[in-house]
Length: 448
Length: 141
Image (cartoon, rainbow over all chains, first blue to last red; front, top):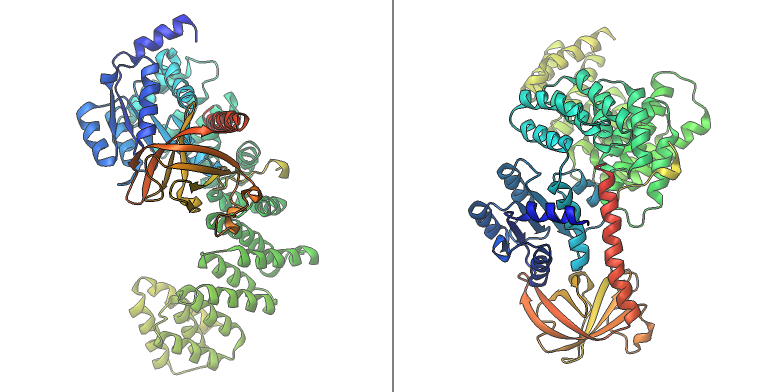
């Protein structure tokens, strides 16, 4: 750091107050040592051992900067972050540094997408702490006109969107590549639900910086909402090439790949998944969901839309659907989707296999129990199916799908109108909001 | 989409694991999930350990593993420590502080260490921080 930068930093730090929230005595001492080495007077440094003390000090001292451990005995640091953001909406005068022992890609990407300025890994040394601290404060000690304008937009975005819009237009003119300003403009339009304008702003942002994560992520969602799937796919390609894929985005990314007939992407997610040592449940569930989306698309194309699908592709879809049922840990809806999809096919053995797996994994889940009744409806004679559905209702499995079977089968068996109407009344009594749906089912059944 | 570029943001941690022998009480602490390193200085370090596993003035040997594979297989400290795939630091417990209901923070003054390992450990901490910082900044720039 040159002499001028040191001077600016000293001036910036002069009246700033600091709060460390740290249960460890050694870490607290190290933070204090680091701050004092950065020319901050002892009187401006405050310490809290837990969240309760931190809340009190936040109110009383209004610290500009907070350095907190992620692991606090009496609650979550996010409460303090929210309070601090309200207290100091302009983040050029303030900052928030998180100490955490979680260095996973998942954690780093989530913290980076929050309002937190820096993530310091535990264990740390005074050097590693100080180097991170300087990365946060030095740019804030000498902001450009563009950075000042951006911060002003961010500040107003929280409570005065019209003013923020006025400011962002000025900010755009202050930099040759104003990708952050365009991103903020996009966020302003999203607040006003103006999707087309938001889209243009995010697209402009990416023209200035094609790999800006925030704009890529928002534009992907906007394209998805506007059903511009090919453009969404192009963004998803960029996202997955430049950044680690967040598991919770996998179902959306998989959907758009399948919608654009880029089936191999799903296999690539699966291949990447197989290399992960001890994957967590969330990851397993999301990969299972992506395989299910893939299988559903192939099966629907062949059996519902009558498209010509080659034998090896349909067999691969079956294989991956089976794999999904093995991977999936705790999402009965994934199983429900697999089973409902396989009901369209003639692959009875796979259907049975997956149903067995589902019923063992979720013995008390209503959605899975309903699937058994639906599967029986596919293969039993009308009278047997009707009896099964009526028994299911008696046993407490009062679900719309079961009433649908009863209505259809009652008509199909030519039972008296009195009984048909009684079935309709029972269905409407349990699900009054679905009265129209049930009536339509009856009309259709009578036509058939 | 190029398969070589797909990296999943998993919850996998890259951390070291610790167990120790309390040379004063002759008791071992193998509960590696409850031992964590907080802070490293020139010749001392701070750890969080299970309560009642050690006290001020006790001497300890700290065994540092780069992963938990071997730790998952041992139920007692082996007599022949050379079979442990780890590095060792010897020290004396200075101050102790309650950390939470179940854990104790201890400050250890190191009196026996492999200097090369120690320097590597410190530079590992600092380079890992740099790596995380770069990943973090990629999302912002």
